[in-house]
Image (cartoon, rainbow, N blue to C red; front, side, top):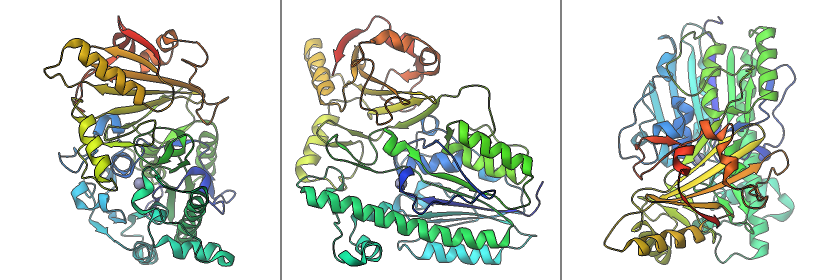
Length: 469
Ligand SMILES: [Zn+2]
């Protein structure tokens, strides 16, 4: 037990795993996770998973409406801890209910103040009243807003004024030229660099004291692949969104054996963002954690299947992003009308989910049909048409409740998730009835996010198989 050890978690919103420049590792001090996976591809559900330790498939927190059941994870810290959340994204304001268990939770609408407040808390921490500080920054996230121009100019002084702020076009990049698209990627790179630089300053302050256990993580990445329609975030579960940076920075009081064990596990096993708080809490000696999906990171003999999910957004093949119960943010009038028309056919939010082992990833999209006055053949026609709109080349399966679409990627051979082996490799549906998918995958047969789930063999039993989408 390292009594009085402080905790600092830095969440750099929308920071891709490959955008951490310069590198944060320090031998013997700061270790990086080889593969860390977010529970959801956008801020609210992913930060909910980080703070509660619960998978998105369990907390279903995709809207501010509805109450979030607390997992009690933050409350597992000893009473002496002062817990403070400093957040920088509007969806994390108290309406998110993520402030539960925190003594203080403050939202800032500018980029600088969360870091200033965190620096004060780090400087003032005292052994008798240790702190747990959650510092969230939207610097990288906001690369599409005009304020990112200053970060661009700082990073590229020879090309001042060259930033491209996409604004509302960020969802689908409609009407962008190749030059603008290149400038957008550079603007994001400059914003990411700024976020990392601010985080490094705080990290160095905490390192200097040597009584902070720190983690640096992101809630999701960001898409820049215009040609494949993999843009922005939410509504997809590709690795550009789910693979996030994760670093642990440890004071010299952590025993060498524990440090080595953590480093070995981070190098060999995919870990989840839900593991971050359980790991930090175990490092400062919290012995008993509530029943959550995340666990203290250690070498494990069993192969874990990590789940990620979105139930609010869904990207279609032409870069249109469906938004369930949204308010039309960043959507043109035309897109809002298309959104309304599509949702009128659905009995609940779309589901897009991934199951991941070290070597493979299974992605499932499910759309549940809203039964109206149309005939069974008209319903079928509507679902088949929706299937044709899905991104990628999924294997489509039609059930009475709706449409299921499957993609299986061999991550070791195909890290960019280009080739769905269920269709491209002629493997077919039988591959889904093998280990680990047959037992690890469960899916709902209805649109309500709280709907019970059945196993994959049940989902696939006696279905109509439509082939590739
Ligand atoms: Zn985010």
